[in-house]
Image (cartoon, rainbow over all chains, first blue to last red; front, side):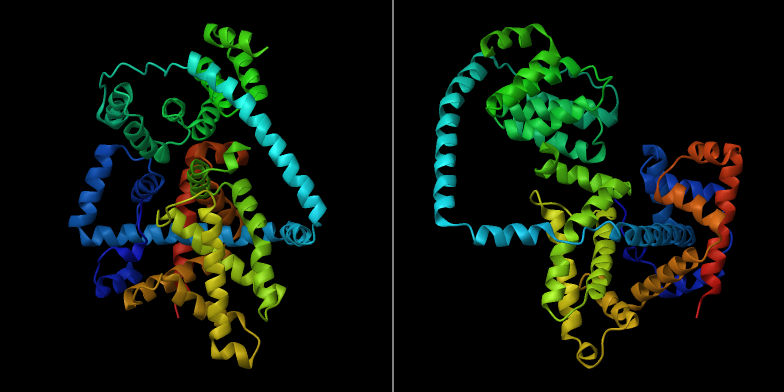
Length: 261
Length: 196
C-alpha cells in the first residue's frame, strides 16, 4: 500500500532541509497514523493524497513521520528476533528426515509402495460413492440480493452478480482482492468458500469456510458448516464431513447425514 | 491444518506479518532458520554468521511484505523468498574480498547489506540519505528511555490501541495520546542529534 519514503519524488535539497523540521503537530501525527494503518476514511484519504501531491513541504513532513515509524517498527522487530532465536531447537529436524529417507531399505520402500497402492484403491472406491452423494446433494449457495448500498461494497456485489451467473472464477478473483484487504471478513470468506466449492475446487474452499467459522457470531455459521462438510465429502474426508454436518444441524445437513451413517 | 498448506494461507500470513503478529513471526523465524544455518556452515561460515545473515534477511522480507513488494505465487513462496534473500546475502559476503582476508566484522556486513537491500535499483543520494536517517532513528529508538520505548513499541509495533495501553498503565486515554506524542518528539530529537 505504501512505498518506502524514498520512492516518492522529492528533490534532494528539499530532503536535506528535513534536519530543520520541528513543527509536527499531534494532529498531523495521528493523520499519518490513520493513513499508515489503512483506517482512514475514503474521503479523507483522497484529500490527504491530494495534499501530498500538491504540497511539497507537507509531503516532507509526512515522509519524515513515516520514516520515524518505520524506524521504530524495524528496531522493535530486530530486538524481538534475538528473543526468537533463543527458541530455535538445537538439532535441525529437516536434516534428519532427509538422511533417513536416503537410507531407507528397498524392502521398506516396497512396503510403502504397497500401502500407497492400497490407499489409492480405497480412495478410488470410497471416492466414487462420496462423489455421487456430493453431486446428488450439492446446490450452490443462492448468494445475496445485489442491492448496492455504498460504493465500498461495489466490488463485493459486482462479484455477486458474476457468482449468480455461475461465473465462479471471476467472482473468486474479485472477492480475493477484497479478502486481501479484510481477511477477517466472514461474508467474503464464506462466499469465497462456496464459490470455490461451486467451481469444484473443494481443496481451496476448505480454508475459507474454516475461516468463516472463526467468527462464532457469524450469520453464515450453519451454512458454513454445511458447505465445509460438503467440501470434505468431495475431498473424501468422510469423518470430518460428518462432524461438520452434525455441527451445522440444518435440514440439508441432516438429509445427507442419513446417507453417511 | 489446512491453513498452513495453500496460497490463501500465504495471504493470511502476509496479513499477520503486517500486523507484527509475534506468534506468526516467531513461527516463520524458527521454522526457516535451519536451512540457512546448514547453508552457511557448509560454506565456510559460523553459526554467528548464520544468525546475522538470517536476521538481516528476515528484516528485508518483513519490510517488503509491509510495503506490498512481495506477492506470493505458491504455497511456500514467502519461505522460499526468505531463503533466497539470506542465501544471496551470504554469497555476496563470500565473494567479498574482505571476507577472504579477515573474519567478518559486523560493520562490513552492514555495508554489504545496504547494497542488497536496495533491490538492485540504482543507489542514489536520496536513497542513501533515507537509509542513513532510518539507521539513526533505529539507533535512537534502541537507546530511548524505557517508558517511551515501551509505549511506542506497544502502539506502533504491537498495534495496541490507546485504550488498551491506558488500561495497562492505569491512566487516561488522553494522557497516553499526549505521552505518545511527546515520546515521538523525543525520539526524533535523539535521531537528529546523532547526526554525524
